[in-house]
Each structure stands twice: as C-alpha cells, then as structure tokens.
Length: 303
Ligand code: GLN
Image (cartoon, rainbow, N blue to C red; front, side, top):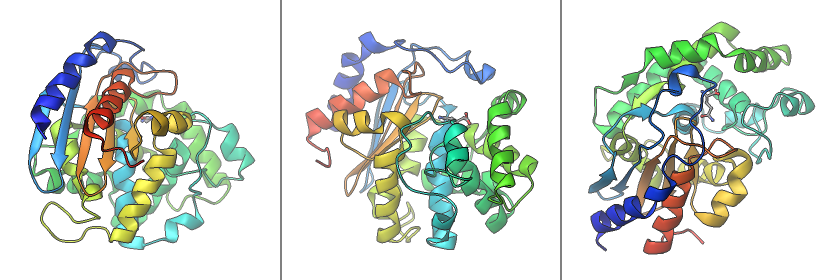
C-alpha cells in the first residue's frame, strides 16, 4: 500500500472542509490558531512514519492527553481507577456538570473532563507530578525530547477554567479527589496544554497499536490493558459524537479541542489528524472526514 500517496490524496480531498466549524475560543489562547491548518500522520506499528499537510506543526493536544494519563495510571495501578470512574459513553458534552451531580460524583468515563480530572488526581498521587509524567511518556515514545507544555495556553485555561474548577470541587465534595483541588487542576491544565505535532503524537500513540509494547520494545501496557484503553476510546473518545465517529470512521479515537484526533488501528498503526475548526461536539470537522477517508481507502476499519 502506498501510504504516503494515500495521505497526500486525503489532505487534498478534505481541503474544502478546512475552516468549516469554529476554533475553540473558550480557552482564549487557542482562538488565535489558523482554522485553515490541516495535517495528518501515520506511524506504522512496525516503524515507518508518514505525513502530509501541516504534519510537523505543533498544536495543543488538549483532551488527547487523557489517553496518556489513563494509560499511565493503568500501568502503575492496574484496574483500581475503575472504582472511581465509570466507563460508559456519556451522551452529554465533555464538560457537563449536571451528569456528575446525577451520578453522585462518579464521572461517566475517563475522557470527559470530570473523569480525566479524577485520573489526573490518581496520577498525581502515584507520581507526584502528573503532567510531568505524561510529558515524559510522550517524549520517550515519540523520541522528541523537546515536547513541552505551552505555558501561555495553560495559563489561559486556568484563568478561564471556572467550569473545570466547579467540577473539581464537586468531585472533592463527593470524596472523589485525593489531592487538593488547585494542585489537581494545575496538573490537568498543564497536560492539556502539551504541544505536539501530528508526527510526535502518532509515534507517541503507537504503543496502542502494538498491544501495549513501547517504542523501545519493552511492554508499557499489557495486551489486556491496551485492549481496554482502545475500547474506552471507541465508546467514549469523542464524547456525545462517539456513535457518529464509530459509524463514519470505525476506529478507537480520541479528540481534543485543539483540533487533533488520534485513532488506532490495532496491530497496524496509529494515526493523527489535526484541523483546528471544530463541530458542535468539539471534534475536528476536517479531521473526522480525513479519518473517514482513511478507513474507506485502506479498508482498515475494525468493523
Ligand atoms: N482542556 C480542555 C478543557 O478542559 C479539554 C477539553 C477537550 O479537549 N475536549 O475544557
């Protein structure tokens, strides 16, 4: 298969969709990104990496960081996180407070904000530096030691983070945080503000296409855990659009409001797309179209 040719064709095919939707502006420093940008990269499970468009431009990974925090917690703590967070699709926006109250402080899944805050809290207990340990994992898996937090984005999110702050306090009121709210939120904002290119993110996610085996060849997750992370990505990774994402793309995927999406073809590759203009559920419009094209052209949907 001519993977490089396929990516170039897809980037051309989705060009009319660039800029469709709107760039996330509730985090003001994300609002300045060009909605016309678009990049795509594929990291094959056995090594080669391909890319097209703006695949080497760094962007804010936002909620995609939640995949790595969950993987790290599972690697240290096995399955114990599931006593504090469910793993069911939410069917509500990623920042819903109503659902958290209705569920008595147990978030519906680890990829909506409330669930991710619980996972970050656990990672903070386990490592003393949740955002730093996620950054370490990303650097190690991608081989790029320059990966870092964009501190302007983290500060912008903290300044406008009233809803996440309300969520963290609600979790604490139900006894579902182990650390002080302010420390947990600071780590959460930092992990969301990590900046990576499509290339970095595809290589950093590759362990999920390798049944948990890290870039260095050692096991990071067990095959059992890797299967579970992919399953939660499939059912919960794109929030209230997870059904539509499965219908169109047919792969485990995780989006972020920076416009990135990571998708996994188990046994074959990790894919990253980036297009900052988002649809109503906070997922990249051009990105979903590109992944739809990818599974159509390759036949690599899991279905
Ligand atoms: N940092 C963002 C927030 O907490 C992440 C949301 C997202 O990417 N869906 O609102």
